[in-house]
Structure formats: structure tokens, C-alpha cells
Length: 131
Image (cartoon, rainbow, N blue to C red; front, side):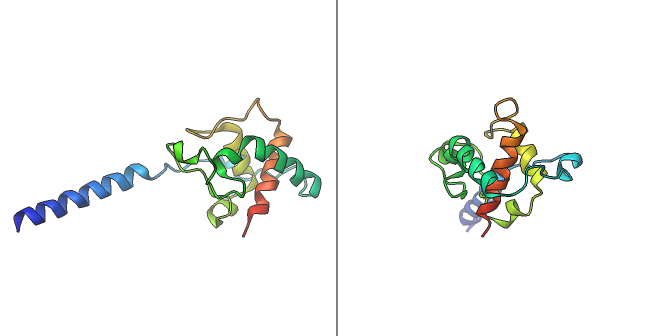
């Protein structure tokens, strides 16, 4: 009986440890970015430009349809964002802009690689993944 109890407790501790390690740290976005308005109007031209950039720079990790299931996703330490989920779609445009521009961990920094307008076009395209 003691052995069974010890196995149960050990398993519970291991499960909790793995759960805590696997959880990504919150990505704190500065208030000035959270309140930032997208200066690029949502339009067919913007979403088409955003789609071309997304395919080139984002789809390998985030997947063609934004599910976070791109071919590189399994090799990453963190799970790429699923852009179809409410938790992503409910973020402000400025939050998406900040995260794309600055990067973190497996998410590359696109500051200096893409123009601000390019990033805003990607933000507009990501909005098309809303379910």
C-alpha cells in the first residue's frame, strides 16, 4: 500500500512539474502598444499583402491557416500561437504588432526585417483567421 501511495505521489509531483514548465510565461505588452491603433486600413489590398508576407515569414510555424501547426512547430520549444482562437483574436492589433516586431524565444524579431506597414498588413491578414 505504501508503494502504491508513493508511486501516486511521485506521479502527481512529476505531472505538476511538467505542467508548470510547459506553460509559456505571459507575454507582457507595453500599454502604449496595447492602445496603438492599426494605421493600415483593413482592405483586400492589405490582406493580400499580409497573406504573401505571412506565407513567407509566419506559416512555417503558425501554419497555413493559422492553427499553430506549421512544419516547424513540432521542433520549437514553445507552441506557436493559434490565430483562430479567441485568446489571439481578442488581443488588440497593437499587441500583435508588438509581438511580431520584437519577438521572444522561438518567435523571431521582425524589427528591421519587415517594415511597420508590412507588419500591420500581416496583422490584418491574421484577423481573417477569426472563426
